[in-house]
Image: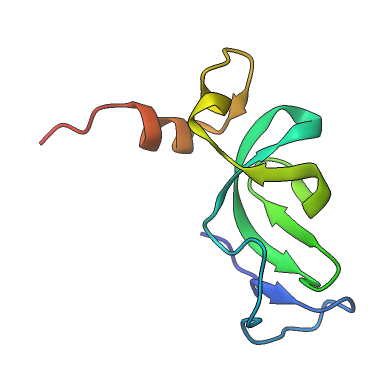
Length: 93
C-alpha cells in the first residue's frame, strides 16, 4: 500500500511511535482548507503538528479536525473513492 516510515522527525529520520499524538495513523479527519475527508497515513514531526493524509498530503494540525458525521452531509466535500465506498456503500454478504 504505502511504502514509507509512518513516523518521522523534522529531519525525515524514522522515529518510534510517539507516546503522545493528537492524531494517529488511520484517523479519519476533515481538512478545512480543501473541504475534504482524509485518512492519516503518516505523522511527520508530531511535536510540530504536521501529518500526511491520503487526500492532501502534508497538513498542519491547525487545518484539520476529527471527521464528524455532519462533514459527510455536504455534497461538495471531497472523499477518496475507497473511503467513500467503505463508509457509505452497503456490504453485501
